[in-house]
Length: 275
Image (cartoon, rainbow, N blue to C red; front, side, top):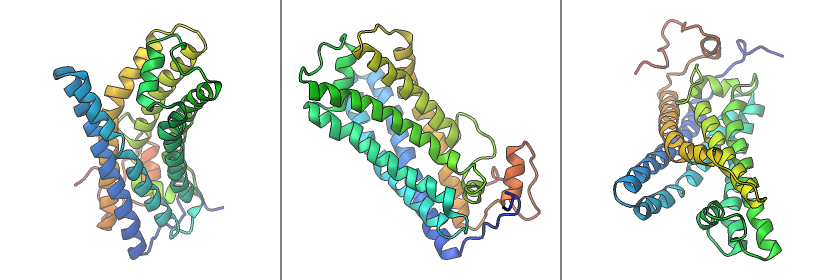
């Protein structure tokens, strides 16, 4: 099998442009979502909680089309790289996340007769006895929290799939050389940490346990740190997709070296940070 340095990443111009446009459009929506979530936090602190909550609910409608566009773009690009396996896997994972999120946010909460926000608040403010009494509804609530955790794990797997040898033809174009909180991988890891803490704590409450700092830390991550990280991460992703549209791509050899700590790029190719 060819090594990462030898993989050909040439993508026909038409397919590259259509796929990159989809990735760019998805990134724009996801930047908007995370920015609105930050605005919602400011409004909640400066005006009242209900105003911030209204904006936050609106923001949660943007990640669904955003991730769908991102997935479509990854699949489109992967179909023309000749190394579509892992690259296409990233796109497919986007649609898997979409299905899981629809299930935990709307389908399962609908079985309990409440919105998912109401359920989360009800669990947080009780010992579990305030939930619907019918067993089927209780099962739906547990399922909602479990699927929320699974969806966050799938979101982590999307950029990681582009770090594999077969996925690197796209990873070399779309990912940053370093992994930090304001990169795509850093954001999904931070977001998953918040989800695991919040959903895990709520499941513990349903089991009769008393939780303290894990739930509070998880909420802080979800409402403050994750949106800030996400806004930067998806802005960088959109920038890289735009560079691909302009034909200014960085090859896998140089980007792979960047992951290992090298700052070299071939003559004639701009650094990822140049623009």
